[in-house]
Image (cartoon, rainbow, N blue to C red; front, side, top):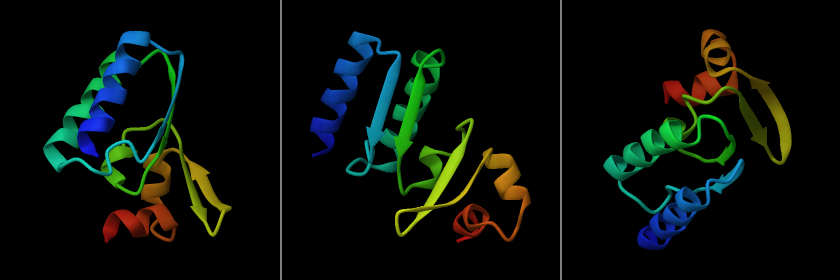
Length: 97
């Protein structure tokens, strides 16, 4: 499954989309590969809108905005730094875990 995800990401790199939606794009890869993918996304899609759906905090910690859902309902939405500063936020609690 991880190889399939990498091929899909390769196709996206070649296409140079202005809007990119990633749904658990790094779920089936190891941490080193996840880090490489995150670095590649930052470098090659800095002028694109990238929506990342992820459970791994490392996949969204560098994002401009984070939206936390709980049971399909928006629980909070703000910059990662603001959510981390608020120790009562769900995002801050997830990072602490």
